[in-house]
Each structure stands twice: as C-alpha cells, then as structure tokens.
Length: 272
Image (cartoon, rainbow, N blue to C red; front, top):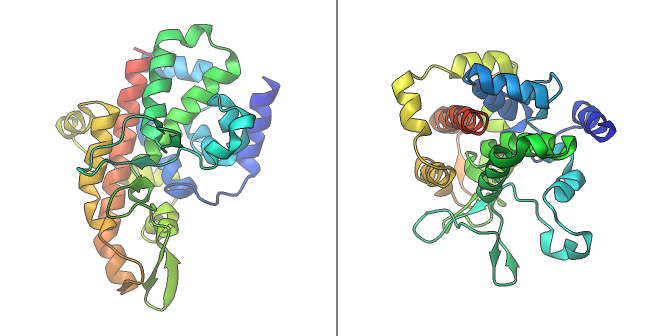
C-alpha cells in the first residue's frame, strides 16, 4: 500500500515527456472509458483503486517506468534486452500487428500483447492478486490501450521508427513523434480532460458497438488502417501548420474516442 501511495504522488508531481497523447489525451481516453463503464465494473475498479478514478492512473506507465519494468516481470539482469518500454507495437508487412514480444533473441515492442495478457490475468485472478500488482495491471491496461491508438506508437514498414524524425510546420522544426504525442491534441483543444471528453464523446450506441467489436489485435490493425495517412509523411516534409492541424487533428480525435470506447469494453468484460 505504501508503494501505491508513493506512485500516486509521483504521478501528481511528475512532468510528462514522451507520453502518447500527452497528459490531456491519456486522461481524456480514461474519462471517456469511465463514462461508459457498467455500474458493476466501475464499482469493482473503484474498490481496487481505493476510491480513485482510472483517470488518475492514466499516465502511470510514463511516470513510473522503473516500477513498470518490475510489474511486467523484467529482470534487472536482462536490462540490455529491455532498453525500450513497450509503449508501441510493431506490424507485419501486411499491417497486422506482430503478436509476440520475442523474435529469436530480439525483444519486439508490443503494448497490445500486454493489454491482452494483463486483461486475461485480471479476469482470471483479480481477487487473489496482491494489491500493488492488481493496481498496476489496471493502470497499465488504461495506459497501453491509449498508446496503441496513437499513430506514432505504431511501428509499421512505412514508419518503423515511430516518428523518430523531424518535419517542418511553417518554420518550426518538429520531431514527428512529439507532434503526435501531445501537440496534435493541444493545438485544437485548450481545455481540460473532462471538457475534452465531453466534446469528443458523441458517438451513437451503434457506432460504439461497431468500434468495440473484435479483439485488441483487431483494434490494433484498425489503428494501422485508420492512421495510414499519418505514416506516409517523411522526414523533412514541410507543411503549413494551420492546414496540417486542420487536416490531421480529426484523426487524433477519432483515435482517442476509439481508445476510450474500447478501454471501457475491455474493463467491462474483465469485471463483468
């Protein structure tokens, strides 16, 4: 319990650096999800999080990376193999997400793998988990579902570095990954996460049912297809800043909504 309180304080005090969607985006995903939880799921999650909202834990995976490695079972002696945290996922040549975390002796980044793994573990064994492990599982699912919907957390053949290059918006030289981590949302949404969630969360029940159908790997493939235009941008490309945001911000908004609805569907299934 002491460890959980320490992590919670770290979340309040830390400054986000490389978080998919940034703090507002991740919090918006969590808030949209919270608005679509069943009463049973919300009651159970609130109990496991000691009365706290999933929104508070939305950036846990960025704020507490050393604890993240421990919670995922990574051994310190293997640190060289795990130099990158699994906040992204890799696709095959046809765009389908790679389904494992190992390829021979190589570590393959795969946040979808951990979404499925931790969801299955929670569904089967939540009551018997230790307090800290259970909280970490919930927090990591909340974060990684957000990550897997961020275009520049997808490592595809057209963009294998997940945006680790620079483009120009007017005269500003911008790292493409950073643009999609936070700037793309902040540019058009100068509000807090609660208001942003209210503005974004306008899909019908039928649309939400279509969005939440399938498995996390199906959702990952949908993210690849839906954001293909983002990955066609190459290093050194030059854009009018206003026109870029007008054209690409709707993609970001749609991906955040999908992440929120799918996170709710996953949590509702776990805590049914």
